[in-house]
Amino acid sequence: MRKLFLQRVLSTVPAWVAAAALSGCAVVPPGPELDRLTADIVKASFRSEATAKVERLVQDDANRACSAADVAGKPLDDNLAAAIRAANLKTIRWPSDARYIGDWKEGEKIAQSGRGLTWTDPAGQPGGGNCYNCHQIDKKEISYGTLGPSLYNYGKNRGVADPYSEASRPVVQYTWGKIWNSRAYSACSHMPRIGHAGILNEAELRHVMGLLLDPTSPVNR
Amino acid sequence: MRAPFISAAVLVCLLCSAASWAQKTAAQGIAEYRAMLADGNPADLFEAKGEGLWKQPRGPKNASLAQCDLGKGPGVVKGAFVELPRYFADTRKVQDLESRLLSCMETLQGFNAADVARTPFGSGEQKQVTALAAFISAESRGMKFNLPNSSVEEKTLYEVGKRIFFMRAGTHDFSCASCHGEDDKRIRLQDLPNLTRSPGAGAGFGAWPAYRVSNGQMWGMQLRLNDCYRQQRFPYPLFGSDATIALGMYLGVNAKGGESIAPAIKR
Image (cartoon, rainbow over all chains, first blue to last red; front, side, top):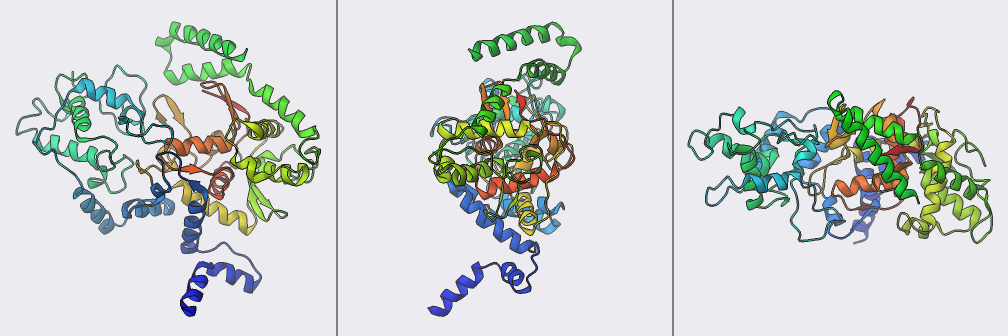
């Protein structure tokens, strides 16, 4: 028992502090110690507020690996990137009845809305997709962001004349998968994992699909 | 009284920009709108209030803040803002402007710093801290950011701040870098400064405290970071917490050479 306790105490005292104290010359600790120090500081610096609980600070493997790559300023190792894509691909829930396309008018409303999941948003109310924050979509909307690519003419540019046709199937499925979990296709994508994280439900996602792929949607006219 | 004035200004601007919409991009229109508003930046009022608060005897000890050491010696205000956050030997901590003010309010005036830190933004002593920050930042207007970043504590916290800046988490997997990691990006029509280097870091970091026209409020850097984290879908960052100060170190050091325009006026 005593030995275990000591080990725990010793492991929590950063080695660099001890080294610095011994040598009398303080140095910036090496990377792994900085990672540990950062984790401790993050843990002590936030509290839960409404629906935004501290559990949200816990990173999954992809977020941990992508954050570390960003800090290093280097892309992920190819094998790790492939593993993250594969793991995320498995999480995609395809529409049970193979209905991919909803009402583009509803999709437009969802794309416009930036509501949901902040500590000031009431729990249980339908949230938005935040799509226009980062993407151009309907050309009539001039207030769009540029963090993501333009989605104007999304279906048209990909030759989707009939989203229900066999020929359109690969594009339609990819689009569903990309919105459900963007990391299935790009390991460190900056796009939220809309379906996977429960930001939109299946019915809402279908409407956004309509906005992007329905030939009668303003996106494709 | 202030709200009608602002609405009138907004209306005038909407009319003027509508008239010449065709010749202008949205960003140019917004820049003009800001320039017009900056002519009468209500932050002036907060600066004046903050200056009064700095000199006025207050708190349980009925003392002023005139002997507060913001890093350049007791009572030196000019130039202090562009060197914060920095390490303070008396508290043995790296502190930003707002957390340092709390320390001075506790030691000099007898306030309880932890109580003030827990007070919601915009109420009680928090309001005074914001006004003081407006005054202190204004005294460095036009000066260039030059954080010392020389002690091991500062250098370590810079490295921590960098890691926090790139930390992806929450329901949307956002990090600070999701929006502030590249040049020339926008959310909707709002230009986003690249905070990983100069000049973006100077333009972003060096504008706060700022008066926000959209809600008629004066915001310090702590509230600016707090609202970023709200929109990131993160949990609530504690006022003056080490994570917020580490971020301040990262942004402030990256802002080196950038000119401070705080307290600025924002959308």
